Image (cartoon, rainbow, N blue to C red; front, side):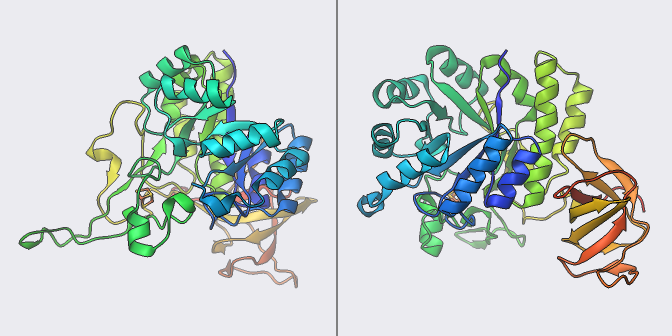
Length: 403
Ligand code: SF4
């Protein structure tokens, strides 16, 4: 059984490095043009070059999204852009337009072409067509595929497959929706989705409001950890985490949790106990998750997959406290992100380690003053940590650990 790639999102160079440090085999990013998620603090050309260098040094790969629905004007400069990506060492581009796929093959043939989930490939016929006619290297499966459909597609078509395992779901067919366009003039298929389906609405019928409570119609997020053994057995090549808009903490915690799960599954022929799977799912839920569901893998989702009530952070169980800047002689220099108090328990989330809990015994600011509490984000503090940590490691706090 081939070990699948763990593919992580990154909205900027810092998050890209974080994803790779925490175990991503590949990272997908967006340039400043031609990409969906135009608000996801996209990468400059120099950032892409730096990402490729960092990835190469760590044995990882960079995929670049070129997945907007293009209009005529969007083709200006595209060929030169693709050639530049190829020269920088980008492994693959993710495309949602057949003409762009063809252009990549002609102008930058060393780039792999991955067919975006925006193409909504849900069957072997479509995959085979794209493979035969456009010579695509991989198809990113529609989130709307069931596991049975994926197994059948892989048996019938030799193209590599990539499947989502975690993150946001669209309440429509992966962005084939104009809610956002209508309500905000922001085009979901040109990178501007305002996630209008997650807003709060009054539910009315012909006689007026149906009830007092506000109503949303956004989907719960995907958590498909329990389906990964089936995906590995079926031969899915890449397991993808959604979220180029997500925080550094989300990237680190989710990538780290899936890294450990995939490694354990790979070492055990995709066979682990229910108890171990529960353990890994708890680790996954330490990220800043919304409510979750298994998506379409088990069949068409029912009403339990929709968040009808107003959004809340009730399921968030950890807070991102700080990033480590340096460590020497038992003292870490950290930069805070959220309120932090002396005496509270904290966890160090480090690549290649399980979580390690310690108590923040003291906090000194840059002037050497001892502090009891810090409320200002980005404050630099010196705190004793009883084990070695490294720059860019993450310090977090469990809301369930008693202090
Ligand atoms: S508004 Fe909601 S349903 Fe529409 S594209 Fe955006 S996420 Fe999907």
